Length: 252
Image (cartoon, rainbow, N blue to C red; front, side, top):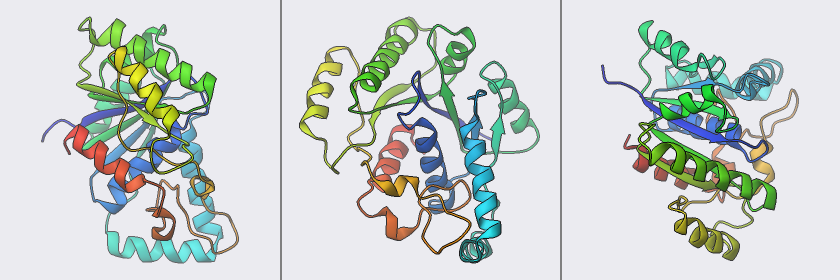
């Protein structure tokens, strides 16, 4: 059995979409493309992924429309939802290793990480990732924070040999159009001088990313830890393109 690939969506500032990206990419890989995955929620202050899963359980139980969709999907999928492990940054690696020793064999393990590069436990966890993706938006404060975080990882960890990270890329999120606007291209040229880069694909800013189902109604789900995104909502989101680029990067 080969070792799983450890992938993290990490940043030191909330609100840039790391938990949403983790859920979207993990779910697309698992439910649409059949790649076995697991997710490790290391944000012990709020455990956003677990909140998503609890919400998914609630709406698919209470909403007849979503319950029908869930039943139809799993009758064909023939696999269970991917596991979400709840832990702290300090225990994340041990918890994941124990999970593997129990006979689980995901191809990719996604880590949802937040915090500062000055925290020893977070530094140690990041250092053990194979690939790191740093969400970045065009909001000034969030942009500066993401660039600072990535720059610190590069100069204090990657260039000093303190990590096994193979590649790190920023990921533009909440962008107004499907193509990179001029501001993103300007920032890309700036970060290139720092030795950083971003993925070609951007995720658009859209209300569809908030569509996670309700206890009533018959609207589709885009973000879910138990179901694939509604095909009608995929158009224009760039999620398919982002997952393809991530798969190419992590070689899975």
